[in-house]
Length: 405
Ligand code: ADP
Ligand code: ASP
Ligand code: MG
Image (cartoon, rainbow, N blue to C red; front, side):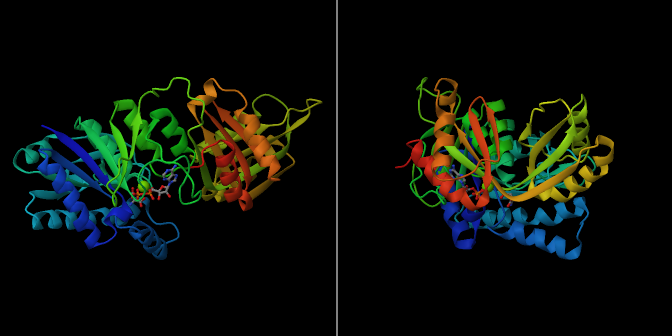
């Protein structure tokens, strides 16, 4: 069976006329002799409204019921698409996550896919042409609806493509591919014809929301042939590939930014073994995702400062956890800063190319932008700066690395 997976994001299914247009795109695949599994998101803005609805019912909505509410967005679009396909004589039906079933763990709001059963859909596709699966959702072993976290339909699509051994997984969205940086912020960003899984993983994890990070990790693990394409224009898109053909590529691949960061500094932390384990152990208990960490070295071995970043959404729980351990650890005080943003430069070129850090720091200095925290990996350099300068930083770095079109 020639099977392809096509995923359409929120703006691609924003209203019924748009859904009718993508129905024609799907018909085109069917006409080429393919069986199609379509994964759909909720209509643009619907998931946000559903979140607001749950919040208006309670400050702390039950996580299991929160998922029941949120999953309804994708239920609507999958059925509207099935109706639109029927209208043009394509045999299709909608499948909710629990009907497939897509089995997840029970961590509501950020559930992990454990297994996707393929038999019912494969049987269905013997007689029909298109199975439309609601993205972003599954069912736990406790028989409760679960959701996969914001942007999770990308992960649904890749997981489905891997489970059904699909020939390719095409992610249709509102841009015509992966760019050197967010084209909505830097107008002269350049479209990439291809990018490696590894680079895409770094870009996504550093804030490039064109693909959810988990979807890229899954594609890499299961070798899924992944592309990002425009729903609105017939253009080639970007292929996510295993290895770069040009082995000694000298350019960096892209720049990502992550808003909604917060920085915490603990000052006067006694300089003795076990302190970092104690602090970050306490945060881990609440599943707080700590990102950048720096510790100043103490000259007299008495006290150090420890700075780290977290998602701004975890700030309240982080502050209360830090307060609880202040006496035990014995640090002097802690300072919180919200108005910060992380900018990351990513590229395989960093493995062989020197001077990338120098270019990055010089460019920021020339624009009078102060760096709060630096962190690096083999193919990435990230800096934390004041959010007041983020557009200036993105544009000047993009141009300094020769990425402008
Ligand atoms: P969808 O609703 O289709 O899932 P998203 O809004 O989640 O779409 O992702 C597409 C958006 O990702 C684009 O509109 C763009 O603003 C943003 N984006 C961020 N970084 C990049 C990048 N490097 N290349 C392309 N798009 C990017
Ligand atoms: N509708 C969900 C969201 O807005 C999932 C997705 O679109 O990928 O996050
Ligand atoms: Mg998305």
